[in-house]
Length: 207
Image (cartoon, rainbow, N blue to C red; front, side, top):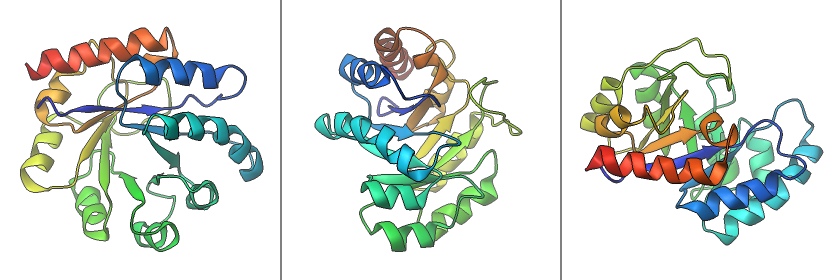
């Protein structure tokens, strides 16, 4: 399974020098997608923060995905939106964002939610958390065999999320994750070194 790619999620604070850090991360090695995830800011402020980051992604052909907000995704002309279980319906997002938009859905550790998302027309499903994470509170723990089950059954890509590091990601790659969603493991240290370490780990697991 050497086709596994990185799906980078922003820290909650993307102000200040963060655009420079994002550029370093994206230039270190290939990243498939970047998710813009901020909390407790209004849509105008979120749009202002997103603009330079979206431009960096566009210049590098990295998909720019907005977390939670269909409205903000539409306003920005983002490449897609990632929906939690309480953030709206896939059908509504599709109607508002168009056929080309990438729509992902958080499915925790639930086969039922994943099947529902797939039937509703999601472009990918996200499972997790696979490991303890400090990035956000997690009520659900998923096991790698969930990824294998999904791969055997469905064509839609699956994303593994939650506490993933270069040191622990190999079982998820081998189990069939199409994407590893990573945040803290990148932003809590040297982002360029972390991206390179993830690529080495994915290649090692696939080899």
